[in-house]
Length: 301
Length: 275
Image (cartoon, rainbow over all chains, first blue to last red; front, side, top):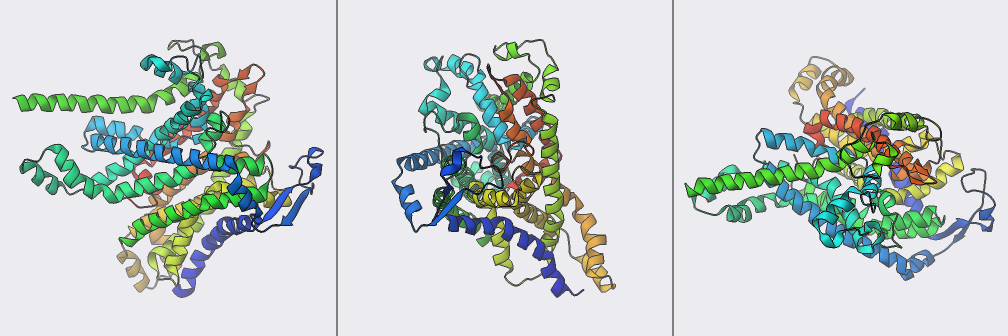
């Protein structure tokens, strides 16, 4: 077989699969977002899970779903929760990871051993992290509850997951624990590409190590930092697993992220049209971030 | 003199900070792991010393939890996803790496960008589709949705590895009259094999830990391990000792796999942005 046929034949299965498994549902939910798609009034009598049950009612809508979304205070609440979570988790995890990367970059047996530990949190199931954090924040017998209570007197005996602010901090904490080690590995990789001689020359010129960091190391790290920040923002925007397992959006709606809000409307109220409309509001910032990421990764080549 | 003491203090300070980081990483893992060997009464106390027991592992495999079924589901779903994705990804990656294609950039970016679509957006139409086809709560449905997650990663990772294989042996064999398929089978595949295995392990970890799809489209028969964590509720409350035991079964195999591929771990997750 000739190469010029073969090369397309090789790409075809993967391309078709991606089109079918990702683009089809994207278009489908776009279409859904302009309809009212709900269970009929008979919803109490038979469970949705029965495949033969045909109780959907679908009505063409124009922008009612979107309009309803924009008028829903709870949606704006979840937008606010998502942004707060995103900003906090990105700043804390990127900051900590940068510090840790600088500490671990020099090599040596001790540092290399600690580096291998960095893989562990990331290989762990986020759902498991969520449920075990819930366990560790329990009043009376939770490990974190006891540790933080001992360190900060004001936090002794506090019900973490019952307090709106502390519950959000708990989620940010679990997410930072999950991501910081991974980002550290990324930044260590970036540090390896910082030219050594420029750093040494600055040292010989008598610059303090802080000035060397700010004037030489940091500028060289900016591309890697940018990639880390954007990737982390994308993953923070999608945050679902730990919210579901750790707080389930509570107390009240204090930790309900956008992904959880969509899940709730789609699969607890079975209001698919509305959930699709809201999910498109999540796609918009995601597109922007993805575009930025692609630009950073590909344009420099 | 003063300088060297200052340096020693700084070194000691760094050492202490790194040690802190290691402790922060390990303590939660240790706490889950130790909970798996505690009796239920010991879970509700913060003692460091307790009489270890293996009873929890016995209990999670019995009714009503039947965790072996979830373990089988997780293994089959992640395994099948990888077995389907990796050959497809290898073929596509070879083409993207070695040939000029029409719309190459567009196709490549399109495949990669699907990685950033939030799962919660595409799961809505999937749910309705699987419901119509009677595929809700089946392993097949889970494999299909996981493929959307896994395939782009696999293509990118394997392309990176094939890019790193020098062209000359391939070209020499072509000149000697081997066909393209022979060259791929005899030369490229053996050289790319470590990279392909790395990608396969990486994708297995992602599919194993996948939660959102599984929690929505499975209900009882096809429930996977991470979703199974929510099973351990009893009238008297949450059964933390059993959750810990199940947790060990979820995390330990993945720790092992991650260790095998640790050199390439970062590359896989950043879609090659950082090398």
